[in-house]
Image (cartoon, rainbow, N blue to C red; front, side, top):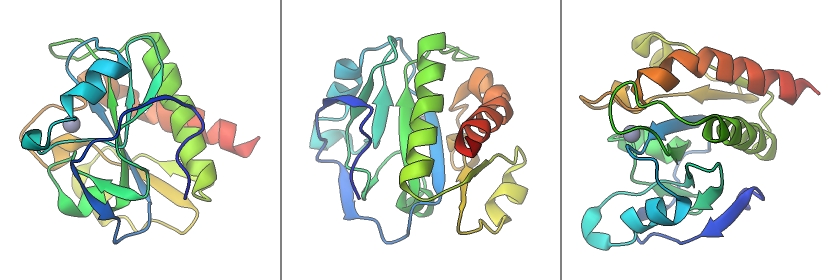
Length: 179
Ligand SMILES: [Zn+2]
């Protein structure tokens, strides 16, 4: 499986587990905590001592970077199970709650979600805001489920700003997938 054609900067991180053992059926957007460029975000994950990575990152100007090949399992969501099946995306954000993201970042996230769904044969992006309901939901073969880091660790990620917009995000992505 190829990576997204929307990528304009690539710096691969050594921090990943190789090929996924589960097919992609989730997307997990994160807040990177800082209005950083793609170069800076990829820089955060270049050292093997850091033990963290993501598949894609979106810089404050909306450019998209590749950090771990989409077919590989990144180390991003504090959950082995989630990272095996999720495409993880670190997004430039403010430094504090609600970790607001710039319009360019949000627009790029919508584009990237549409692209990831299309390339993986998914016709619908599903958002269920209640953790236990979402994690026990049986994802159909043509569906992609949105998940969030806060369900797997005691942290706010992706922040309340994006968390509250995930319903809109799914709706926007789905209206584009129907075209
Ligand atoms: Zn996160």
